[in-house]
Image 1 (cartoon, helix red, strand yellow):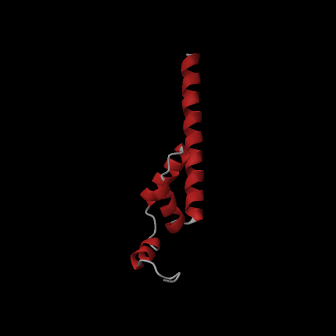
Image 2 (cartoon, helix red, strand yellow):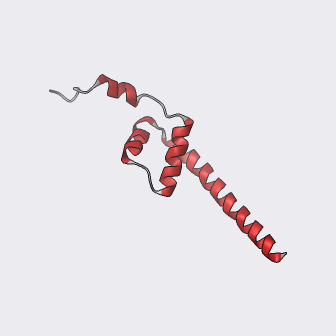
Image 3 (spheres, helix red, strand yellow):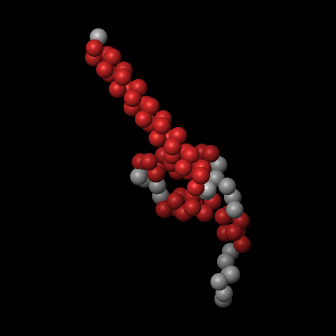
Length: 80
């Protein structure tokens, strides 16, 4: 058996692209630190780094914006 002996369905599976929900799910799981090794491997095989970087930046900005908004609401409520 040589190095090229592998299941052809694996190659076809590797060429599939991740859908937006899979990318979002992976970014959220990674942010919480609960990403499964199965999904991590899928992301590395099927995903592109640029998509994950962009999704991570968007998630980070939304998270920071949410925290700032909640803090402003609490401070405004406390001042009343």
